Length: 207
Image 1 (cartoon, one colour):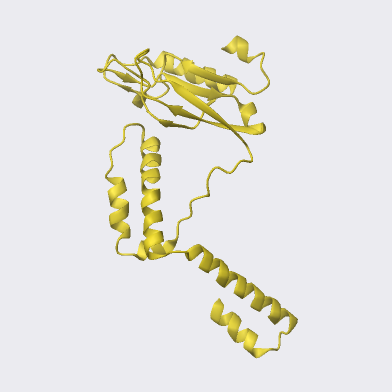
Image 2: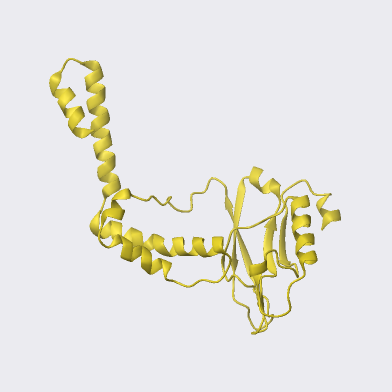
C-alpha cells in the first residue's frame, strides 16, 4: 500500500478486507487484538492520507458466529475532497459465498443534492410529547463506538421529530418564510417613507 500510494496523486479508492481493526470496539470476543497491528494500520492510513467512506448497514463485517470484527472497509485518499465526486458505502450482511460482508460503494456528483438538510425548531422542545419522542429513540440499542451509536440514535430520532412537526406544527417553515417576506416588504416601504407611522407600527408588530 505504501509503495503504490507514493505513485498515486489522483483519486484513490481502496476496498476490501484489511485484516485489521482500527479501534478496540471493532472486535467482540476472541483473543485480544494486538496494538502493533492497529498502530501499523493507523500509521499507514495517516501517511497515505486515507479516510473511511461514510457507510451505513452492518458495523461488524466478519463473524464466525462467536467472534465479530470490522475488518472490511472502503477508504479514500485526500484527493477525493478536491474532486467533483462523493461516495458512500453500504455494508451488507454476509452471504453464502463468504463470511465477510459485501460492500457496495455508490458515487454521486458533488453538486447533487441528495436530501434536504434537517432543521431543528426550538418550539418542538415545548411540546408535551417532545421528551417522550426523544426518549423512545434513545432507548434503542446499537452496537459500536460512542460516536457511531450517537449518530444511529440521532438518525432514528429524525423521522419521529418530522412526524411531530407535521402533526402539530404543519407548514411552519412556509409560514415563517411568509412572515419574513412580509417583514422585509414593510422594512422596504419604511425606508422609502420613514415618516409613515403605519409602517413603523406594522414593522414592530411583525418583528
